[in-house]
Figure 1 (cartoon, helix red, strand yellow):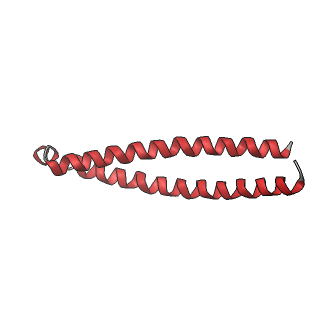
Figure 2 (cartoon, rainbow, N blue to C red; figure 1 turned 120 degrees about the vertical axis):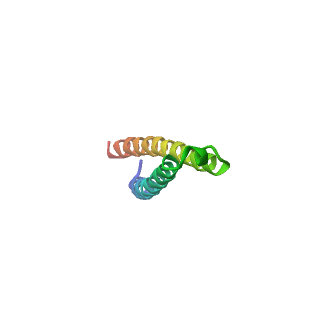
Length: 91
């Protein structure tokens, strides 16, 4: 690997790490929204929880929870790959 490619790889890895930080920020915001939806649902009377509106709130909270879990897994996998690339470039 020549110096130019090594520099290009290092630059792109750094940019990818920046994107991962942005994704983590968005993931945190989605998790907070999920918590708000869940709290709203939990504080509803049972009769409203069983209504269409209540079910939509619960469904939204559930989908947000799955989205956050998926994002977390993807971020971890990408971060691991970036670590491996950095090790290979440094060797």
